[in-house]
Every structure is written in structure tokens, then in C-alpha cells.
Length: 107
Image (cartoon, rainbow, N blue to C red; front, side, top):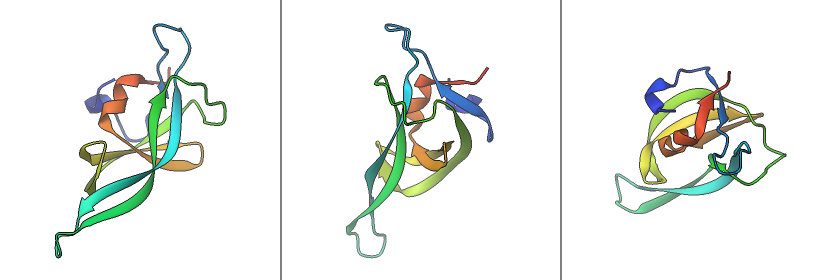
């Protein structure tokens, strides 16, 4: 799936792994993002909940998420400052646009 195909409120799920024929999973975890303070020039850090896609079974993580849109940030996450947001279970997590190649709309 391409980022341009997403719509706010769209239900999404990880794709099936073509080698194992098993559905991949959302993986929620904490990540420290980095940025630069505009006044002092010092590096600053911020912890946030992020989501990526894994082929490892994670039964505690839901298999369906809801796309909530994107937002530009002053912090870097996985090399980008545009962070997409998805609601997975009762958690709102940031996700990189690179991960959408492993996601498809719920049918």
C-alpha cells in the first residue's frame, strides 16, 4: 500500500508474509526520537510509542488498526520528520511511512 492511498479513518492490517503465508503483526514499542533545539542548537530527545510491522507472532497486539492521519514534527523517527498515526487497540502510535509497504486495507 502507498501512503497516498491512505484516508483518515481507514481500517488497515499487516499483509500476509509471502514466504510463510502467515499474517505479519503490528509491533508497538517505545522509541527515543531526536531533534535539535532551535534556540540553543542542542540535541533534544523525546520518548514516544511507535509501531512497526514484524513477522514474529505477537498475539497481545491487535491485527487491525485505524489510520489517524500524519503530522510534521521537529523530531526525527526512522530518518523522517513526517509521522503517521495509527490507533492500534487502545494505543495511538506513530508509524513511519516506510512501514506502509507491509500494510493493506481491511477487506
